[in-house]
Length: 306
Length: 223
Image 1 (cartoon, chains in turn blue, brown):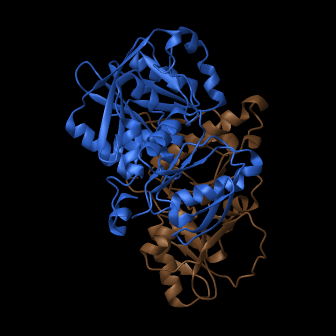
Image 2 (cartoon, rainbow over the protein chains, first blue to last red; image 1 turned 120 degrees about the vertical axis):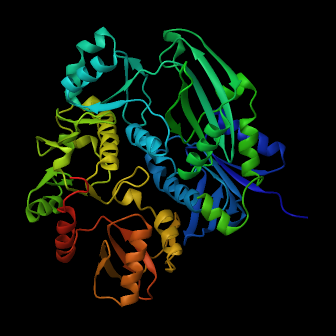
Image 3 (cartoon, each protein chain N blue to C red; image 1 turned 90 degrees about the vertical axis):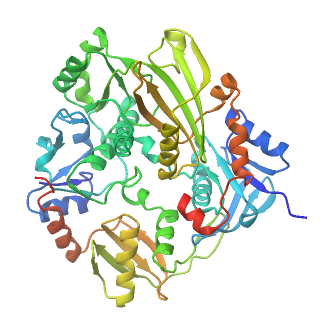
């Protein structure tokens, strides 16, 4: 009789994706080891070379690294005193020879939205015309050229995407204090695509809001499962793989004339909102991956996927 | 122009600016100063270096001496806003370095700078790929006695290796730096020839500084 698989789940119980994946894994008789973001009951004595060895101590129990078959992580920031433990776990997540959703260094392009836009364009995706500037005249020129323009953060820090209306025009002088990202407004329908190990789940989002994540400002949001062209789905799978990700949440918009734009690829998507709205089995698919289904066993295949 | 991306408090960065003809320091404050234009739709890109605007086409090389833009460096920004401004400036710097046609040392790989881009999981995988043996890195919260290791360093600039070490280590270091997607780095070996670390935090040696200066001052492709 083979031992049950063991999967480490690092994140907080009140985070729906964490809770759902852990719950599905438990239902499948996977040994789920939970680690909270606080890391207050975690010890570590590991070595990486790059194959990891050693053991963790979680809530008083020793967990040999060799016994960990997969890792799902969406931790919040630890307390300063627990940063070394977070660093050790991150290093382990970078080296573990099994599915890790996602490795901390993968998808770092999402920290810089214009950098990721550059990568997306290089991969052949259509991206919006974008300007990042500290020059008010350049911003005004850009807005004048495209008429309807949105602005948003440059970094991965969440910001509410907003249109550059008359009041914002009056504040363009403020871009002198730091870089601001402007993009041509792309009309159309938002589509969130969760890409996972060769498959994808697409959700159409209808909203009157400029940024549908904040609907209370401008209107309601309706989500429904939808289809995307197979070729686009395959390209998103290839992109996700090239970024070193096993799970990604890609934000797209399809224009009335059928052009698909890609805005960004989120390496740690909060998929539960879309799952709730559509019934798409995303948590189950993540759990499948962590439980070993669809994960290549050979080291050569593993290297190709990393 | 060579732009040295670093802090005004970084003596190594300042010495490189002095050493390389036409080099200027690109500070954190430059990143939050008026003049930057960076777009994907045809507007001519412009930098701010040492307080002056510079056309992107006039930047031939960039040497990166920082892993992050720190909030405390942005003295012109209100203290309450510095953390956000630093994150934005850092993200912008990544975008600029990741898309300019100038030679960037080290290139922005997956969205990180300096040693943050060369974390052990990455360089160890690269070492494995080129057939080098690595010395395990131990991470532990248990008390232990540190062992003093004999260290020998090979410094690599492109295909050139500097350091008094066996030739096979030098070849291995060149292969490792290339496999890690870097141009310049120091590869640290133990006495047995196992790789202990790959780092870009050190100050470039005299020989490497000269080689880097020559590399970064080359006319950029398409200029």
